[in-house]
Image (cartoon, rainbow, N blue to C red; front, side, top):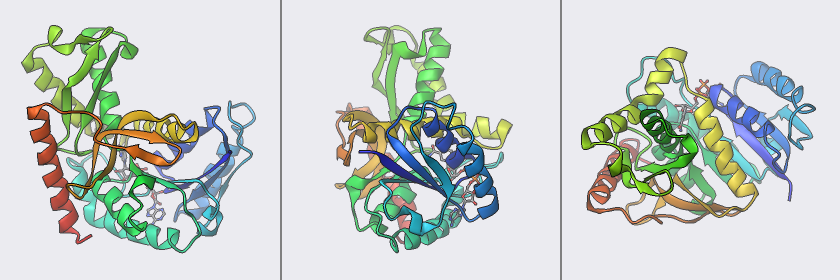
Amino acid sequence: MSYKIGIIGCGNVGISYAYSLINQALDVYEIVLIDINKERTQGQAQDLCHSIATSKSYIINIYYGDYSSVDDADILCITAGMPQGSAKTSRMEDITGANKIIDDIMKNINSTKFSGIILVASNPLDIMTYKIAKLYNNQYSKVIGSGTLLDSSRLIYELSSKLSFPIKSISGMVCGEHGDSQFVVWSSVKVAQNYSIDDYITQKEKLEIEEKVKHDGFSVAKLQGYTCFGIATALSRITRAIINDEKVEFPVSTYDKENDVYISSLSRIGKYGVEENKLYSFNKNEQELYDLSCRIIKEGINSINI
Ligand SMILES: NC(=O)c1ccc[n+]([C@@H]2O[C@H](COP(=O)([O-])OP(=O)(O)OC[C@H]3O[C@@H](n4cnc5c(N)ncnc54)[C@H](O)[C@@H]3O)[C@@H](O)[C@H]2O)c1
């Protein structure tokens, strides 16, 4: 099956995701770009089309469209949101503005025949993903937030820098909220063929790394005004898992039925979306941090009466 992908919100994140898709040999035949800024998005579509011939991709067309063009799309990626800027200190600052944007987008999506999978990057991530799933007729397995996949990638990078080990020799994840209450799942972190991280760094160093990972996005945004490549690559990794039916496990934001929130736990992703979540057994301390994160996300959800 060849895929059609729609991207809603073609700012820094959305357009970087499109570019990341083009640079892979994925079974994608069409990308539709939707944004309230029609002229700029038309320009972006043309610019991206000019990269197809020299890329790895099998894409036939990339174009600016309205919502009628996503009736037959297989995946929609929602990356519309409030501008990131260099002065923010919490993703929760965007909640009121993002809430209105998502209302508009979901009204439009629900007026189409679209019935595929929705990926979400818009912040505050877990709250907006929850809202989207509720407005998408509670189809929880079809709605996935990028969650802490990006934070996990940042963790691996920070550990690699600290230890001077190759990035690919380190594994581990961040779970919980894609926000202030996220936590490193230290029991999952492995170095150089399965050695425990405890053999390499002290408790104090762990805390320093955890804080750095939490603030990495803001540090980049302070310098650049926004972040885009990390999130775009995380989104395209999830997309690849869906298209290739990889049934691979990622820390992404999925529906936790027991707590009635979207939150990142280890989830299995395949062609139907989320196949299973909460796959990792946290230790007692990690479970407490997860529960705290659930409560914080729930407060956010309640504050906008979803
Ligand atoms: N999940 C993550 O890890 C992660 C990482 C980086 C950024 N983000 C989030 O991604 C979102 C986008 O960030 P950005 O830097 O691309 O912002 P941006 O301002 O560059 O782009 C946002 C785009 O959304 C469009 N838009 C606004 N309202 C719309 C609507 N109703 N319908 C269609 N399009 C609409 C705007 O015209 C703009 O092009 C933000 O919420 C940001 O916080 C998430």
